[in-house]
Length: 426
Image (tube, rainbow, N blue to C red; front, top):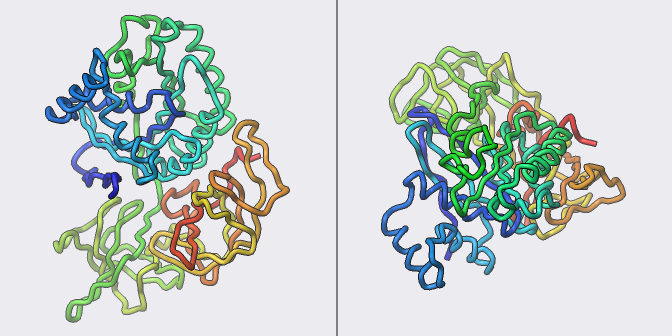
């Protein structure tokens, strides 16, 4: 049995889409906030809401507990059925949303790496009574490492501190200072009560001192930037039909056009695109995240794992990578370990050469006296690969600048890595 939900398939070309991730410590009210967003944007089916109402009555609650819209999944995670990210889809008249609902327990912090890896905005919850805690810092560090462009601090349970403006200002100031040290430029703090609905969708009469947007208003209006990354097409498989040979994959970034001069990496051979096909139909151009078949002018050896990139902006294939790594597995990663390294659709053998500079998420200092990564550890890992890998810096391309380290015996994912060090790294 699994309770993991598949990511909704949404064509971003048909409308404005925002991918966001939520994070918060246990009992900060994240489930209630997600439930409130779904309920107040009419994303809950009537039978689902009726079931939640009946469950609330059975628990002796006077009001409908919107957290029950998501708490069933969270409880199953805690029982060990699955530990994964749940994806929620909702929409308003202004924008559509894919929300990655990540676990709150400290031992599941690694799952935020999955949920926030494609997010354009992270909502980090804190309890107004407790303020900035260690888990808040951990979630903020992950957001910074994953280069999430926009961060919202949702100071929840303001009703339990009398909607006090000075308490909100204290928490917001501490968070903003910490986020600034991590290079997070776009940070917005919003006081809310998910239980009462204050400043989630509708403006709160209890906090007239807050002159900024509600959470939903900010989600609807935050500006996203597309098309800034260099074009990358990881080849997933080769199509052979008579005399035609095409190379299929999903564009991770940028635009491809018929006639473009491209390189096939890691070999570096150059050719031109003779045709592009979407759903079997020829098109003049294709753009991320569309899945496309590419025809090339020259006959050459192209296989799964190769990367098609424009000649004017192609990464240099290398056999050594220095990454900021987050340990996902309970199995430790040690210097000297032989692993598989997965980069886009390419998998190669590799060896961990060194592990250094483990990050203390509270002080933002590093510890060099170590050669092992344990669950949730964040550190610098140097890896040597058996074959060249055409990886970008994570700062330049989030998809092609990320790697996974995999146990070659079991196939289990051990570690997620971001190529290159961020400028704020100690």
